[in-house]
Length: 99
Image 1 (cartoon, rainbow, N blue to C red):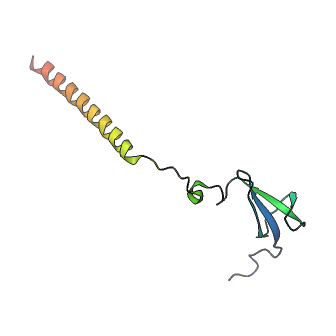
Image 2 (cartoon, rainbow, N blue to C red; image 1 turned 90 degrees about the vertical axis):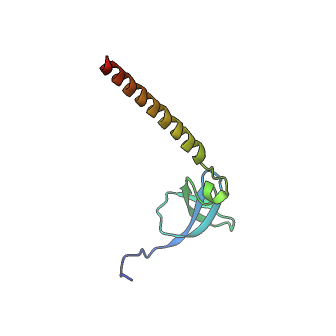
């Protein structure tokens, strides 16, 4: 392991998910300006997170799945329509040349 690349000053920090208000405490060297009181009555630095495992759709099971079959069907319909228009234009062009 390389020397002198890791910070020396780890401390207890409270991380709070702003979308669910869930919080946990862990060692960190993150710089914070806010403080909060934890369940043990002690005051700790507070770091506010926009999303965590407690609110992320992948971890909560509320993940939405994309209807890929519907997308494929729509694409194939657009492709068929485009090909039909192309064939109609070619038929009209060859009809105009025969005259």
